[in-house]
Length: 73
Image (cartoon, rainbow, N blue to C red; front, side):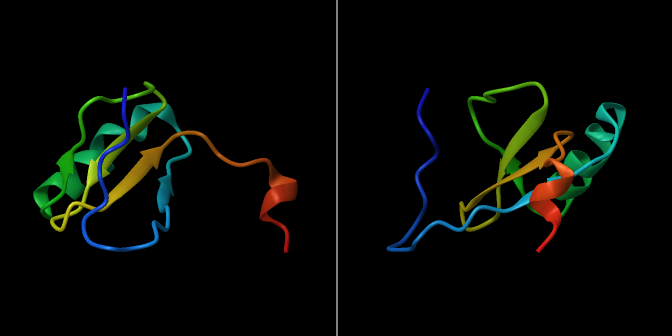
């Protein structure tokens, strides 16, 4: 499995959109696709979906939340 290529000469900045409930994963993915994103291939883990924006930049929608101590500044 290889990561999708990032278009252009950019430094990759990862973005993830977190969902609280695994059952909620399909709805935000469908919304992102309706807005122009597409699913990347392959999908590395059932806990998240890797999508590509219209320009080809990868982002994730996930049910995996970071540990609370990582969210405190």
